[in-house]
Image (cartoon, rainbow, N blue to C red; front, side, top):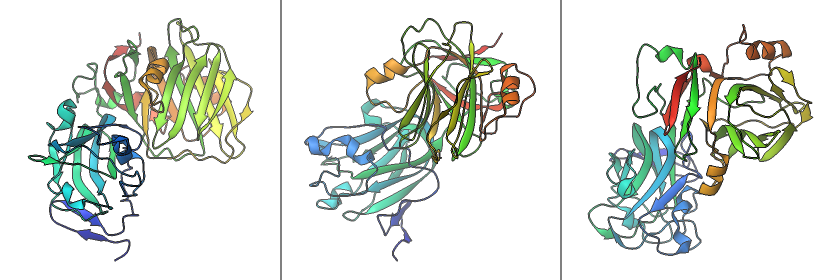
Length: 388
């Protein structure tokens, strides 16, 4: 049965052909933050399980490996909470495939002790050497996914862990401490601002698109208020899947950039202000025409990323750059200030419509993001405040 599936016991589906990745929710684990109970040697570091490869030879450097710990664990931090439809594991193929027998998959919001206090999705009753198996987690919610072998001293080796999931998003109005569903749910953030109070690396807002971001053109607008930035770098919008798909940023005083598909374009513009700035950026793939709009006025147009297609399946975040790897870079790019009136369309708005957006008159409803009906989830020190 090449390319088929075998349904087995224990709540899992065994993939006969390990080159096939299950379809549905995207794999959101690649490039996230991983850790493990110990590391046998440098070759077996934890990130080997989220490098996007199904190669399964530890000897060739494809897999993780802990010491022979009591109840060893491996964990991935997804940065924010997701609803996990399935976890797909690739077992070591060059040796010792039976070691993973009895391992548990745990999902939840507690990072302590490697996430081993979180609820269980599934138990791995057995896996063949080099086999890839998919375990159904039925939408379990959490920020941390852990693989652990309970009750014994063992080596834990994982060649790939895929987390198939979509963002867990609720309207929140209390700084992110608990989700709230109330009469205001349908209003999104109408008449409100998101206030990012400090540069804490744990403060950000995940926002949910109303349709796929598989795009060949778009318009993205938002209103931003900041303090004195000097030459400080600021990330305004980050959309990231396996790669840095779309970033809108202030690189230095009066320098703004758009980053897509591994390439950036920079514009010289009026700087952000403590009195507020309205920013739009437009891009279309056919000719590559790209422009910024500041307070209703268009910049010079530049040709950028002709023929590019923005990829779907990622996560959109305000306040944090998902593409940077080190803590130092995260702190460098973190946003402090207020964001409101964020809208995104899957086409280039006409000049007249951008003027209407700036002046808060009648304009087309955002069909990707619309501030008035936005679904979002707050993490950390971000407050929802009245606009006036």
